[in-house]
Image 1 (cartoon, rainbow, N blue to C red):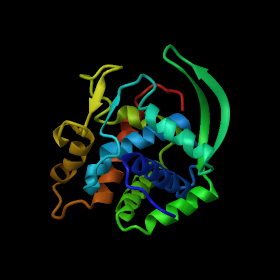
Image 2: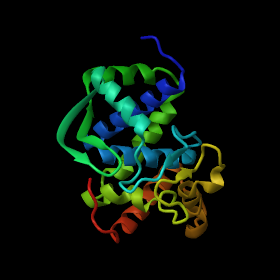
Image 3: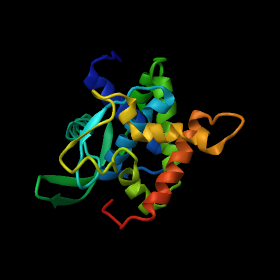
Length: 220
């Protein structure tokens, strides 16, 4: 299968690799909003593995991280037979109307994942995404729902709803507070040896779970 290197193609491969990680950790099908929130967390934590985020900014939304252009890609991949979709109900808010759905990886999607992993450049990304989901999957249901709201970047009180959160699009890593938090673990632990990257990911999700436990319940 011929592969393109266009930004839009890379974004879709990122999403497919992430969905494969969701499947591997037995949390598929995954709800639409929850998947968008997970996409956001992979973006903020990508520098831990020395990777660039798929999306380095987004508009802060009251329902949590949500990417309209990524949803467009998800819809296209459903139509193309790469993702499966189960719909439950429709929702309307002041801004828009959308289908509340859950997604999984189809056999065709898995074949494309296999093709992508034949390329060396995608293997480190897949390893990272699998580690993030491995840290996310054991969280309690409500902690999974609220983890993105607890994230150090998304929860920045200086950024209000409908304003842009820029943690890597134009601004440097000093403004990616999620990554900065993971960099503090070695300093706080005062260990003789530094934490591995995977350790930082798992510690960060334990932190998110603790913060999420203090939040009121939100929609999945």
